[in-house]
Image (cartoon, rainbow, N blue to C red):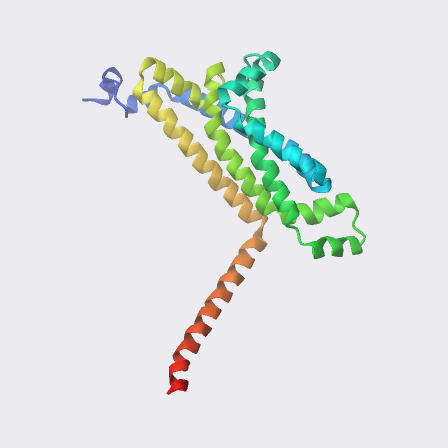
Length: 249
């Protein structure tokens, strides 16, 4: 059967669908990326002060982590329904829901990164005259970057998937195509949009991994040293094991 007839046959894989609906796919992908990027960016901007508050005042740590966890546990349909009276059927509704879902991941990772900053590093910075803001931006946040960016990666991949739920208010990016395809039993549209969602998640994770490695070169150095140290210890242990029988003899 020719590719031109695959639409009529409703095949799962159809090159004619890609050619005839290419602009529709591009528009949905752009919307998907835009919603995801905006949600994660706003989530980071909100999570950072919350994590700082939880670290500075331990009495707030429990409530902050508890509330963000409650947000994450709310089913997506229920979340959008609760936000509907505030934002109506709009892209703001979807972004707000996704931001609330990202908070539990981002706050926990940022807080873990800040708590892992060595005390000697902060004490040395204070001894050099660093004030609280300079200490945060030039010492603590750079050292917390590995954990922070790991949280951003997890939140981004999760948000790429959750964005599809926005299709229920017609702002779901590729999710809108998936839902429309399921309603009309349009197999090529369902498969193509689903594959694009997976590709977006993989590309976003790889891109952020590259950014993380670029911004935190010292982690690779430390890992390399640890690896060399492990090899040296194993070699020394093997050499000692070989010498032991000779000494016994």
